[in-house]
Image 1 (cartoon, one colour):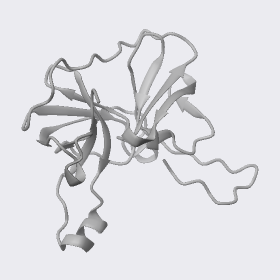
Image 2: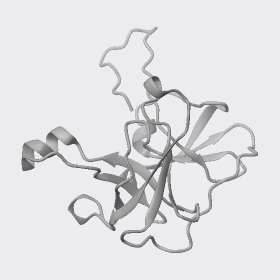
Image 3: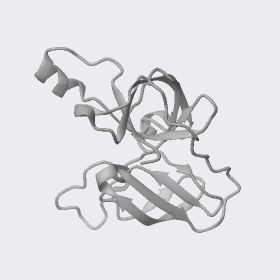
Image 4: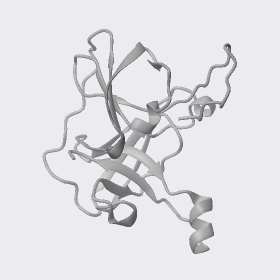
Length: 177
């Protein structure tokens, strides 16, 4: 989410983009809490305004709902916990202002069953992700939901600490929590 200006004029409008996906035919959409953080309103391309139902900032999750039911097929949760090295696919809409509204699919593997500092709420993945991928689904090879793409390791901060640039170090919120 783009930061809001500290003193916006009445006509200023901050726009940011992220990804999300349907989890019910009732119009429920899952995304990351940081995607909708500080947003005065949320719109979903092709569906219009979405209402915020729940936010879990500790786990970086949010649930929205569009006004009408949808015919879009909701994603199903995986029956098993992902394995280390398992094939995964990340879906999303990265770099929205640059790339447009086309869905991007990237493949990779589960590189670690934990996030930074051994945080068990996250998975480390090798699928390339960019700003705007946040909130998109992370699927196993059967197309079942195993996580929500959340972030990538900050290149500059990692270089400052370690003297090396990270390569393909990305994270997803592990589901179910």
